[in-house]
Structure formats: C-alpha cells, structure tokens
Length: 186
Image 1 (cartoon, rainbow, N blue to C red):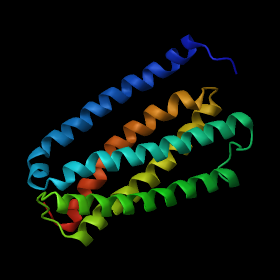
Image 2: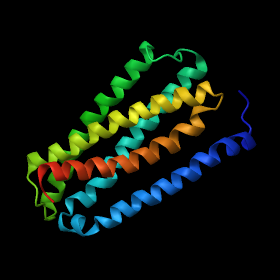
Image 3: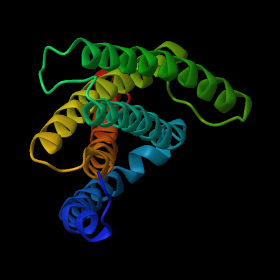
Image 4: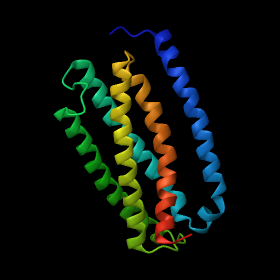
C-alpha cells in the first residue's frame, strides 16, 4: 500500500473532529465532578493512569490487528484464532498492569501523605475493576474498528488510534466514577 497524505487526511479528519467534540464532553463530565475529586485526591492521580493504560493497550492491540489484517495472518472473521489470542492477551496484560499500578499508586500516595478517604482493598477494587472493564471494552472497540475500517478499504492505522483514545478517555472516567459510587465513597 502506498501512503498518500491527502487520503490519510481525508479519511482521518472526520473521525478526529468527532473525537475532539467527544473529548470536550468528557472534560465537562470531569469538570462537574471536580469538587468530589478534590475531596479524594488519590483519584486525581488515578484518572490519567487508568485512561493512559487503557488507551495504550487498545492502541497496541489495534496496531497488531491492523498489521495482521494487512499481512494476512488475521482474517476478517470473528472466529479468527489469532485475533482471539491478541484480545485475551490484551485483557490479561491490562488486569496485571492495573493491579501493579493500583498498589504502587496507593503506596506512593500514603507515603506522600495524600489524603485517601479510601481503604487499600477498596482502592484496588476500584482501579482494577475500572481498568479491566475499560480494557475489555476498548479491546472490543479496537477489534470492531480494525475490522470495519479494513473491510471498508480504509487503513485501520489511521482510524483505530483516535477511536480508542476517545473511547478510553470517556469510559475510563465513567467506569472509575461508577466503581467509586459502587464502593460508596461519594
């Protein structure tokens, strides 16, 4: 495939524009919860970590799928074994990463005298739960986006990153707030 910058811009610009508006909406959600977040500062540290890890895992999965589709070792079927292995590996890596980061953040916050208002087990549950939900959904979005864009003749590499980043940033905050509510901190 020969890369043509005009084609890349033509097909990427609409998805990037839509992503901007969704990210602004997500920022408004975060702005609305600002008082709650300031009351529990450990979650101010947690939000970028949850979103970053989810976006990174989804983007890596998307790149692997795009390469596999281009080269031909992944086929456009939901039953493809290679796709399933990549999907499960992403979810497993996400769970392990969120567990390690949740422990590390909690320990660093406690040594830094940051006000917690949440116990260790509850915090681990919130971060790992939100992270696994996020990685699961982002992984499915990544697979769907890669397959759909490839089927329509678009380069998945141009489409997956903005979609995964936008979905990850939005749902990372939603899942984190959801699990904070389940634990009963707010």
